[in-house]
Length: 341
Image (cartoon, rainbow, N blue to C red):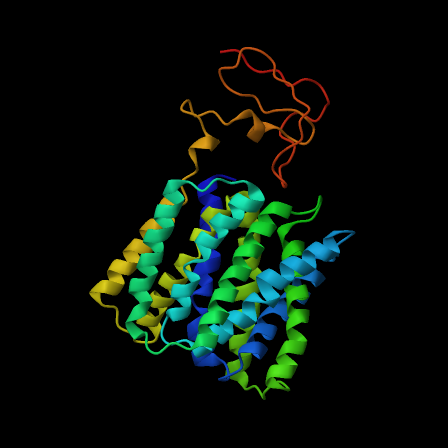
C-alpha cells in the first residue's frame, strides 16, 4: 500500500479521537473517568479477541502486557483524569509535547535520528494546538498537569515500543490490538473499583455513548493506529495526533455551538500544516534517482525486487530490517534476475 494511503487511514484514528470530548460531555455520566476508560478498552479488546481467536505465544504474553499497559491501561485513565481536572484544552497543550517524546525515544530505541524538519514541523503544529485551545485556559491543577504529562509519556513509549517490536509472524493488526486493549482493560478494573466504586446506573443515552467509544472510537481506530505504526516512522505517526485537537475544535463549532476566532483558525492552519509537512518521507528512503535502497527491497526469503536500470543480478541473504516486511521476490528459491535497460 502506498504511503499516502497509509497516512490517510492512520489519520482517521486521531480524527475520531477528537470526538471523545463531545461524546463524554453530551452522552456519558459525569465524574467517571476510570469507569469510562474501562468501558472504552475492555469490551473492544474482548470483541477483537473473539473475532481473531488468536492469543499471544511465548514472549509475546509479556510484550502484549507491556504494550497494553502503556498504550491503554495507563494512558486511558490518565487521559480522562487530566481532561476532567484541567481547564479548557490545557490537556491538549501538554499532549502536544508527545511527538517530541517520540522523537527522543525513537533516537534511543530505534536509532532513528531526528530530522530538523521533524522538529520544526512538530513545533509549528504544537504552536497551532496552543492557539486553538488556550482561549479557555484558567487556573491550573497540579494533579491534572501531572496526569497529562504522564499520559503523554505513556503513549509515546507505547508508540515507540510498538514500532520496535512489530508483530509476531502470522499475527495481524486486529489480534495485536485485541491483545493490548484486553490487557489494558484488565489493568484498569482494580483501579476503577478502588477509585470510583461500583459502576453507575446507565440510561439509553449513556449506553449509546459507551458503545460508540468502545467500537468506532477504540476498536476500529486502534487497529488503524497500530497498523500505521508498523508501516510509518514513529515520529511521523506521532505528528498525526495533532489532528485530534483540530477535529475536536471543528466538532465543537459544528455540533456544540462553540465559537472559532481568528487566532483559533490560525492555530488550526498551523497544526494541519505542520502535521502534513511531517508526513513527507525522509530523504534516506529514496535517493536522488528515486530508487528505493537495497535494504528496503529485501524480503524474508533473501530475494530482492527487480530494480530498474540495474544491469546485473543482485542476491543477498540478509534478513529484512522491517519487522513486518513480507517476501518481495519470487518464492521459487532461485536468483531474482534484474532486467537490463
